[in-house]
Length: 148
Image (tube, rainbow, N blue to C red):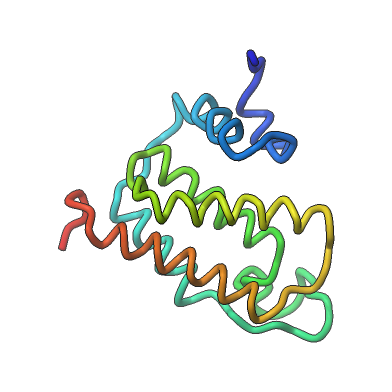
């Protein structure tokens, strides 16, 4: 399939209409001329998401004016941001381990299901997100491009 504007497809969320492999191809097209983050920046970003963001599950729906709103892992936008960061790290060559790639595929499916079914997150959902982050961070730790 020929894509007229892959960047727009990614920006508008239209990528969700495609399977994982096709969405990765769309992202690659969109990223061709984009800035590539350093391994250190990617690693720090993943660590921030894992250890500084909140695992808490509020009883009420979060609102942008709530304290620490942006830090809650249970937010759909936060999960989308995680997927985008991991997918970009794949495209930049920082994440290529088969186990990591499989977990990112599962995250893609998880994200797709969130958009079909807006339910409250569960502790199991947060554990899954943390597991995906742990796997990616572990792979990044082994990266020769990361200053140790």
